Image (cartoon, rainbow over all chains, first blue to last red):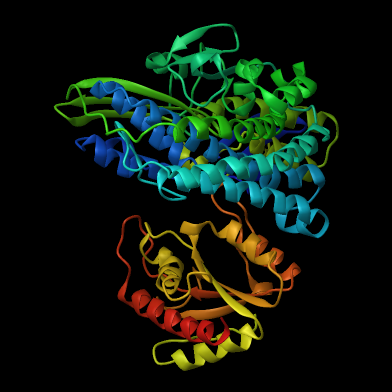
Length: 428
Length: 170
């Protein structure tokens, strides 16, 4: 028995590892081990007011802080019978576009790309690809800027609240976003070109299901009240438990999800598979040019999907900015009831994020948060096992197998801190 | 590791002299790193925030987006020195201050949450800027904890020493 291990998966968020147990060339098991301790936030917010909850739950994650905040707001507003003003809805869309650019630029160019180009990290890439590293930093900076303008701060902004916004962005700040988003489109196109030109190893290929929100107005987008499944079905987000079926496994602090006993993928590839036809602009042209059936089997295409989606987010900003800028600042909408329940579903950069709340007499009685990485973990393990089996059958050396496994895990852009680092190869 | 020296209480003048040695010619920038939600981990941010008022064009923190700021500084012409200020595990008593040169930076890992100091340092050095890290040993880093008195004192020492160097250069 031998163990091939990646004790601490680098270039992801949080602490975890991958353990592959081998008997000769036969893979006995592959486990994605989550070492990050549980934070019990759902219990922590019990008894809090909705406003206090919003001070806590976005801190689950510093990169998708606004996704957590938005999902919580959506769940809480449903529970309290609040319809947010139209300007708040558009400003929330703008903040999600910013977060998408911020997160996808970092993951594609600085975390995933070094593997494909044969560098140990983006630091090493600086010698030969300084322009591309700078491109990534420019895009990330702009994404951060949009987040700060809309939410009040780069991380953990407080402006988006239940019922609207504490403060709306100024017209000057909005105009700057519009101009800069135009200016950065060529950078985003270059990122798509890079990821479209890469060779994607096929060891991990397997059929799976893809879940995403069904964005409103039949447009592409990052929130929705129903969930699209790539088998043609659609479900109400309120039925999230039937979609995720969370369970506990012994080797991980993160819960796992299966849909009808099958693994599934959430993330940029799921969004493009389910809603890619709704894209417009250059993003639509590049999606049509580069989409293939391989996306349905190979998780590595999530990197290309993130690149195309980031371009769409930039191209879409001017339209949203115009809408926000054309409206007067509305007052914050107040609750119409103090007892109720509601589920907020949004597309965090890593996939569908659910925040469900039950409120009793104005205080939180039940909170249930299901993160995208927790939904992806079983699917990651499935693709890791296939990768290990096929690479070993192909007489690949341990170091190559390790890299192959890390590339697959990283393609999902896992946020283990959110879900609660990641590879060990064990031979028997 | 070179240019490494403890600077406990009373050693402010030595710290200032060391920072001045590193600074050489050109403007001096401060980039404060850390998480103020985690007690002493936010020491670098506290230093940068204290320097923001007297040096608004030269002091930045996580709250301004450090990667973008590092990129901007790298693209500015002329000599410059960037001091990253961060809580660092120096395996020393809480509040210990050390100046660590760019070659000795161990933080090379980029995560979804943060671009490594090494990436920003390398980018800045390739554009001809001096880079060093002022590390402060934290004593407590738990979520929503309060800053220890040792680190509070060190934040004040580092702030005064950097302010003196920035006044002379900017």
